[in-house]
Length: 338
Image (cartoon, rainbow, N blue to C red; front, side):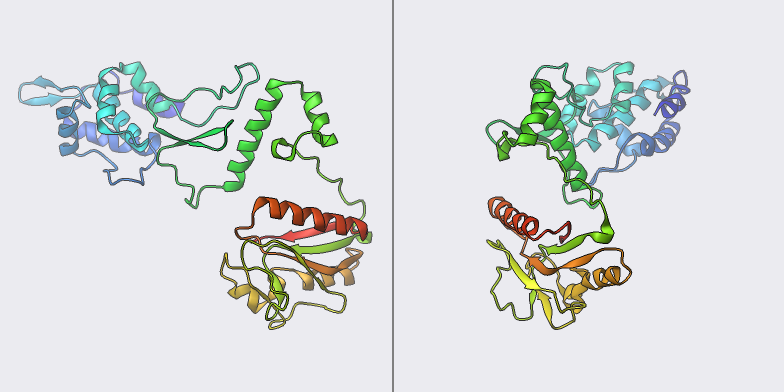
């Protein structure tokens, strides 16, 4: 960003005609402005666009030199800032207000400021999450009586570039940091490890220690992909499951096509039904056994359906499976999810 602004500052004393202004704007916009996808707006200003900006107060009127219109560094800043604020989904009326009240340094700040959330700082008052650029638009959603989530206008959770796991981890990390800022860190960690924090307020989990020797390990296979014997003889729910089922793998080397199927309603089961081992990798586990990479595969498959399953039901199923595995001396588990 610093190099980009240095390129921009070179033009600070130049006088530009309209074509030069547009040329510089087209060169700099891809470096400073993200593409707006929600509404139909021009990616780059044209002569008509610049005249419209001036008419609507988004840009100052150009200076005149005879019949020529001359544009200065400030005009270029304004043209770039308009596109930047449009990418933040601000209406032109609000952009015009910002333009009228902004000097050159404020316009430069608009171009170089991002609206990524700042981390919670223990030195800040409780609940402070840092600052946002004042021109951004946000929507708020109440999660519960204590927590409200703000989402920038235009954010699309279904965009393929959005990594839900990273977002979830950042939310948990922010809440954990806030909890630590409100109290003593050692007592917080102790409360978690001893289980004295309620399940609903537990923000950190102590992971199990690593398996000491895979060559001696008994490894269980678990899936929430709804894999059951052909015909679903035990009538596992295809959505909103309330239970898990166990099926013997003791005499099975791989899950053959036609013997097992997925009844999960939440995704296309075609590939899994063609080869059930792609959901539950029993064939690979048997190969690991033959190569003595693991001790053995546990004799039972645990299966349930994850789609639309209530959290309380999932928690109880997980507790039941964990207790069963611990009782049977299972060392580790592979959970496949869809």
